[in-house]
Amino acid sequence: MDNELQAVMAKAQTWLGEQYDAETRAQVKAMMDAEDKAPLIDAFYRDLEFGTGGLRGIMGPGTNRMNKYIVAMATQGYANYLLKVQKENGFQNIQNGRVAVVVGHDCRNNGRMFAETVADVFAANGIQVYLFESLRPTPEISFAIRHLKCQGGVNVTASHNPREYNGYKAYWEDGSQVLQPHDIGIVNEVAKVTMDDVRFGGDKDLIKIIGGEMDWDYLQAVHTVLIDQEVINKHKDLNIVYTPLHGTGRVIIPEALRSWGFENIHVVPEQMVIDGNFPTVVSPNPENSEAMTLGMQLGTKLNADLVIASDPDADRLAIVCRNDKGEWVIINGNQTCMMFSWYIISNKKKLGKLQPNDFLVKTIVTSELIKKIADKNGVKLFDEYTGFKWIAWRIRVEEGKMNYIGGGEESFGFMPYDKVRDKDSPASICLICEIAAWAKEHGMTLYDLLMDIYVQYGFQKETTINVVRPGKTGAEEIQQMMKDFRANAPQTLAGSKVVCVKDYQQLTMRDAAGNEQPLDMPAKSNVLQWFTESGLKVSVRPSGTEPKIKFYLEVPVAGFTGAKDYDAFNQKADEIVAALKKDLGL
Image (cartoon, rainbow, N blue to C red; front, side, top):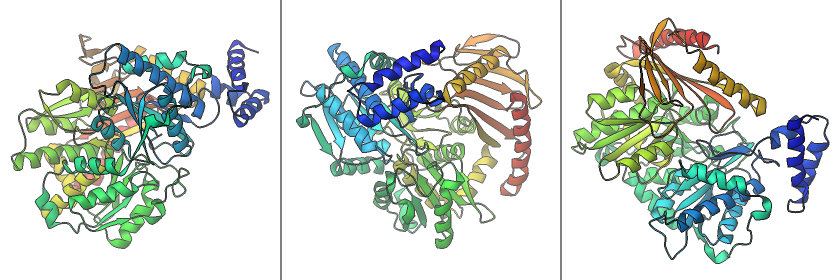
């Protein structure tokens, strides 16, 4: 038996103790006795870590799995850290001498059980808990933390991952997911915790159930995103089809749309059913056209103007509209972010609401067209790392000096206000419907508007390539790929000379002549970017929450004059993408 397997067996052995339930002990014992030790190794070779999205994994027994014991130990570690920070006077708004947290969950299997486990452990550590009565959208958890002046929170969700997954997002007092140094501090505390250290049986008086009153307050906040009530009133009959994909948006998003004045809202009945098995889709990811099939079918039947979806925890959104041929097309995440940014700037300017200190935020892997829009209109744009916690970080840095008006990233998420510090599909869905109403007022569809933005700012195609490498060997392979790219950076990409290399792990930017200068970023991150003479941009980073390495490709094509060019320009971009993939060995 090699050293690695010995270590795994020893780790698994501890899960045969009486502190684990009979079902868990039996499952672990079966893996230990099996001839094929791969499942055992994958379940125990590491502990789940906080990444860009928190704790996330396949459900099952083991330290590398999502289960009530990992959830309990993570919560004990988080509680220890919160109490440590309190002792060091690191919080400004402690009420009644107690640290307070919000706990929520989405529709996933075991979600309620995990959330109640989290609440119990927090309460057992003397922490005040505000536990949502049932599933709620991720952005409402963020809102509640800020609204109740809590010091942190936990949302049990795996967002848009397949049904086998669940997760644990840890939040800080500003309503954003934890960042350095707190994420590292929590990880270090969690690493010290064993099951023997976990406190259970918390005082139930410390757990307050919240629900409808917070929904109302959250909906009032969402309403502040509205820019042009007049255009909504004129087109209140905009024909909208919405699906929550079996998740948390099922009640609150239709209600939010009605509160804005939209009256012609239809839902996909099969997907209004709360179900963590997501029976109507292969994967509950609105980025995938397959997940939007039922919505598009209903949209066709009802001759809808647009079809909209939120993912299971209602932080992401997807928008489907008709192209110039009358076909349904999904507006991708970069296009969505671009359209939001354009509308917020242009309509605030038209209505006299744009201020000199307004600013936008995008992530470094998101379309550079957004920077062109901001620059042309004199609006400051900040580039931050992937993940809305970094957008929230920038808001915190600029608080009191500048005014945040929106931010997003390519992964189908947008945050149109600062009352929430995470992706917010209810607010974003309402705003995209306002944009559709504005387009209709001007004789356009959303697709027509997108084409107009391309004509004004330049056409480019963005695409993301995910290379999946599961398990321990996969993680090692991903690490090696990043090492190889650093050691042998490409000199040309798709026949265009690389003129700039950004290495966010080294925090350096190097030009074609080899001259280096520092990158001004708040922390190091394992990301590489290459920029070429022709305007190509390639970004590569390992995912922080999934077993994959991601390549983000931006391909500009000059000369675009409108929708009639789209197919030809898209084909030309695809040819460049194929050349990029070949150069990158994909």
